[in-house]
Length: 222
Image (cartoon, rainbow, N blue to C red; front, side, top):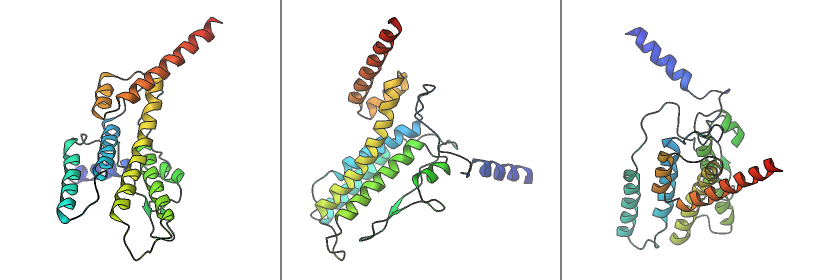
């Protein structure tokens, strides 16, 4: 029994983020490896959260309850990925209150590069989390002329939340677009793309991939 417990402890220590580790490149183009479930789950959830904040201004508690219910529905809609010790959730970034509006990094780090070097999370998910935090920081700075003792107008707050999630979604879509522009998607990846409502991205990537192939053929023929 002790031997089993020791083995579990050693496994957890080995899997924990280490200083010499680096963020996993989950949307790999070389070789063309299918993006993992974790990437598409995060992409779909991020887009769902942006949509959840894109509603009319709250006017009463009933409206607030409907928004919360909408967010909970979004979480339940997408089944979580099977347990996988090699794909950890991205670390959290924070923003200090006005007027400083400083971006806070996870403990023991002070830059995005350091975060990427000390986490086992997907690099694309880390960049997306950073993009969301950075957008939030910019909104914080833009609001510095407002009274810090008063909450933001409800409509403005919701818009900022939506755009912050949208910044994260665009970061993930950009990584996926680069992948699709160089690698033909598998059937599973194509299904995930359709589920995420990214058919336009797939079409653009296909066009880019064909144009690149045509250029290569012409160069070889010369």
